[in-house]
Length: 356
Image (spheres, helix red, strand yellow):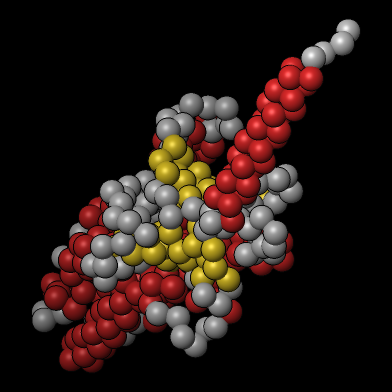
């Protein structure tokens, strides 16, 4: 088939126009992608997307935010208090943060942090290695109520080079998981220290108040002996309830989180009662002469109460430094301790990740 000269010219023009349009589209796309975030280890990475997916599978995209890996990984001498306790994000624009995840930094409108204790052990770095595709870091967040979320940090993209290399990306992901483990361990150590201290304070305060009169002191000791025997029975019941829950918990259960919380609460109660029993038996063994010298007994008990309360106050201050966003709950715990209110104390303690 032969084409006229005019037709061939028109066909060439159409093909050239198509090729030019395609080329412009590719270049425009490539140009846009080179602007998809920026930064470095030193200046921080401006990420195009910070995405949170909840249990309802709804994903919220908080758009651009910068984070500074150097502040919480490399240089331990210049980090501020927020870099010690959480993953700090400096957003480009004002956001409406999920209150259970994001906490504001010094009332700065664009700056928030996610507590490190929320970061589970599964954070990974991925490099898709396909054209025009961003590298990213992803993992699970678990808040103090046991709710789980997926955090996806979409890293900056560069068409002809890179802003972040694989080693840096892997280091950041690994460090986020490690920071989570470290902070949860620190909280657990304080919680484990507080339980026996509360038991010690409660028993010695009761004996100190009663020590103004030797008959009253004897009555209080007898009362405590009966109370401890009752607690031993409660301990056995508590253990049976925990064993029963263990038999119900399985990975496929829809009530898994609720059962785990209930189990954690029972285990906390179990530890508390065990500490009470140990503390009273220790007092009995170490103070056989408690009733022989009223003044010495009162002085000794008073000193123990003061020292124990001071120690508790220091532990609570340590806790506040790790979880400043929970200061109200820590203060409520302190109030419960001052009032020797066991149930309120345990309730507030469990608001700090009951599974820790």
